[in-house]
Image 1: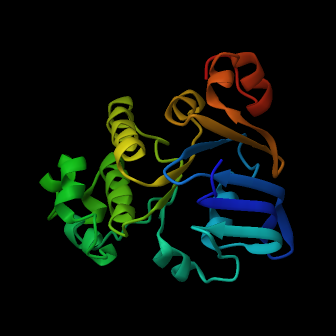
Image 2 (image 1 turned 90 degrees about the vertical axis):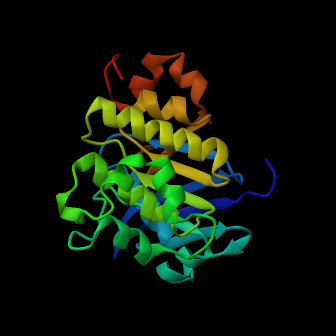
Length: 237
């Protein structure tokens, strides 16, 4: 691998004195994609939070775009080009779709119209308040808002959770477009193991806060029994 765009080396982190991640190392190349899998409560969201600067770092090193960032505040990391789509979406309910996008705009590569081209439904609902949107529309808006920051690294925390299959298909198509044409690296945390493995060429599986597997997604797709052993799911994944 060339110089990594994102690098975690020996990271132990958590909340206060509670250590959730234990000696986690991860590297991702520029414009690469990796999926983070594992049972509930093994540290997947904490991994993203640690990259963002929302946890207590007990040990280790975090670098992004060739720069050490573990001492930077969360908003300084965002300014460097780290976008985040939280599991809870966290859009502003009393602002319109247009206003939600505007408040995040950096006036760079991603504009309102580019987001609307990716998500035509948002263009139709641009005057609607955040709390008037369906769950799928809110997720589109959460992704669009993150893109308005013009990120070179996009972190996605279970973006497909709780959505109807037709909406999952639309969102997955958008994510594939971002992977192939967006010019950014992507870290995807996702419970839909098969979709995640098909999305990214590489997968990292966490277990009890440690890396249990780091390798090609294809090998896990071809061996569902091994996948089930690693993440604790049945044959139908």
